[in-house]
Image (cartoon, rainbow, N blue to C red):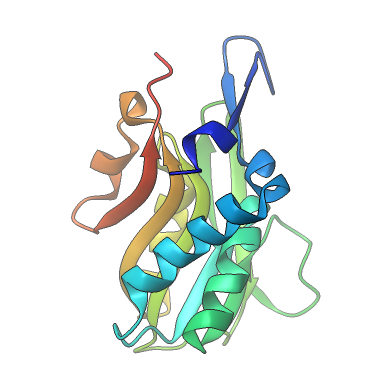
Length: 173
C-alpha cells in the first residue's frame, strides 16, 4: 500500500557506499504510519505478548504505539549511558563499526513474551544483540519485527532460528 512510496533513500550516509533507507518519511504521512502500526498490531494481537522492546532510535517510534495498541509494556533498548538506572547490555557489529544496546535491569523478566521492533534489518547485528539480551533475562522472543529488510545483507539468516517479520524488502546491492 502506502509504505513503499513513503521511504526515502539517501546515498552515502552515514558513510560512502551506504544507501540509507530513511523511514522517518513514513512519519510525515499519517496513513502510511498508521498502516505500518496496524500491520504489526494485527500480527501480534492475541499472541500473549507482554513486552514490546524497541531499538533506539527509530524502533522506539514504531514500538511504542504497538505496545499501547496491544496493552502491554514498552521497553526501550538504548545506546550506552542513555538510561539512568542499572542496565544490562550487549555489544554488536554494525555495517559501519561496533555499538552496544542497553536496557534497564528488571524491565524484561523471565517468561515475558517479547516482540523486538526496529526500523530496519540489514546485517542483523542490532536485532541479534536484542535476542542475546532477551536470552540473558530468560524471556521468550515471539518475533523480530522491522519495517524494512535489506535481504542482500543476510541479516535474517543470522537471526535463525528466531522468526522475522518485515513489511518491505529493499534490494540495495
